[in-house]
Length: 81
Image (cartoon, rainbow, N blue to C red; front, side, top):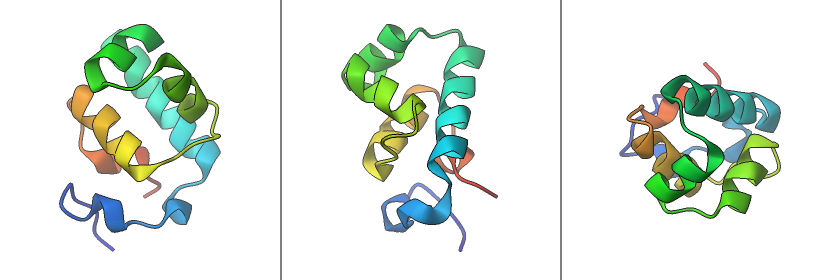
């Protein structure tokens, strides 16, 4: 399945292991130089939501899409290839 912003919400959660997704989100955030607070403000999520995603406890596709947009990345950047 090809991943694009148009069909990102259709991707099943198991498309990426939560720990892998978490590591990719954290690495992307750090590469941009954002703190958790910076990212939360930029994408409109709470600090606790970002922490939960980076801990691998939450890989909600809608939240990942918002984070990807805030980091100016394709949403597929967080999914296993």
